[in-house]
Image (cartoon, rainbow, N blue to C red):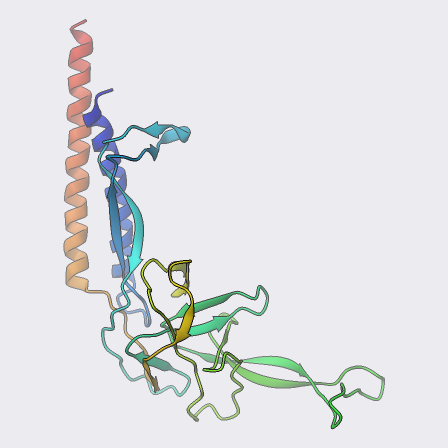
Length: 253
């Protein structure tokens, strides 16, 4: 099989992946806190690529998408009127803690709610307070969280107890020296990788009653979709031409 067939086949496959990225950006143009993704490609001049059934495509067969980097630039901070909505003006992330797994993740989406939590009651001596039947006493407290049960951390790295939702809460802002390549784990959340750490206090300004708008540039994304579709069709035409050439050569034998 000639190299043009491989190059065209890889090109069509990778343009489909690129189209998926831009389509997802467009679908989230009105999603608060959404960070648009940008496809990053790498030439296959020196690298192999896994093909069908684990086979490797040879070197020099076009390029492939190695990542979809996130753009954290701001695109407006509209007012919502909800006291539990928070936005970051400038750089930084909100920190979330998952109580079931102990995972820490970071987000620019500040649409928070209150979640109840059963906390042990302690007596004046610091010992667990007991009911008449000898069981542990618990009290219900409310902590700031996202809509999926993850707790928001304060600027001291603690859970934020909510007694009056209208008050300005000590929501922490955290940042990294290098945010490039942070791993997207869904729900507008990111997890740092080795080159991003360590975490530090962010320099952004906390604004209550606002949310960060999606930073999707609709005009640019539509242009990229059209570009991807054209590239995809050209790659398929190249596959067809390569196949016709092979057929002609085989018939000459």
